[in-house]
Length: 161
Image 1 (cartoon, helix red, strand yellow):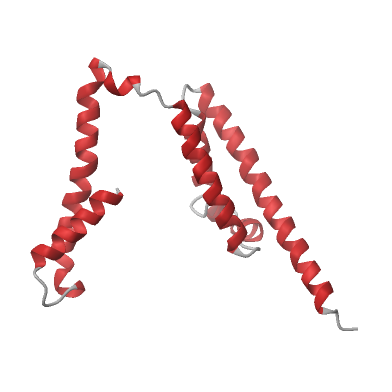
Image 2: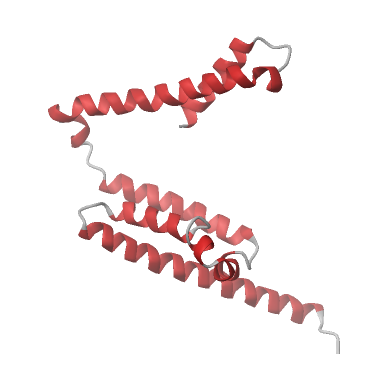
């Protein structure tokens, strides 16, 4: 007997729900564990959650257990997890904002470090972008002034860094 389109759609929806819930359960439990461990060593829970997110990705979990990683994380369409990950990213940024103490930025002993980090975080990507733009200008934009291409790429790098 050939399964009806309705039965097939129901099965696909159940499989999608199962794997989405499996992924969410694994991610949330691991993030909570990472957050707790980070707090025990004096760090923000967000630091532990970010580290756990990296460890759950293909760089470690996918390398150590590729079959299990493939089963858990690549068995569903990407759309549900992409949307949930965007919501999670917004909530993570909100959590970091709630925990951040702006008084540390204006404290007298931190002013130099803040200025150095802010300057370096703009200058380094700008310099790297300029170098990349200068070297790749003949390939990326032949016939256009290499200086203009380099400045454009450098600005794009420094804004998004």
